[in-house]
Image (tube, rainbow, N blue to C red):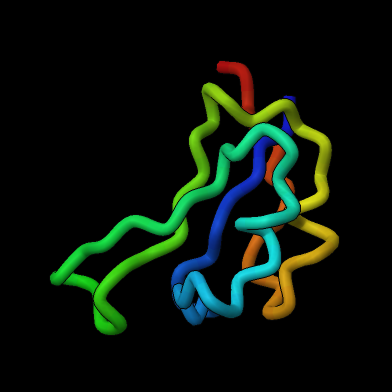
Length: 73
């Protein structure tokens, strides 16, 4: 099963300009303040809440979110 993954190195992590925050129909994407992050926070995905609609992947303006297949071992 695929899951969305955020590539932190590409993400601006600014809630004011992050389209996926508003696009997620189940609010699985959130901004989390974190003083250890260079910009003071990060965008996170709650995989337990995510329903896999893919809106975040298609609307992300920096191509920071992609689908990754989980490997069953």
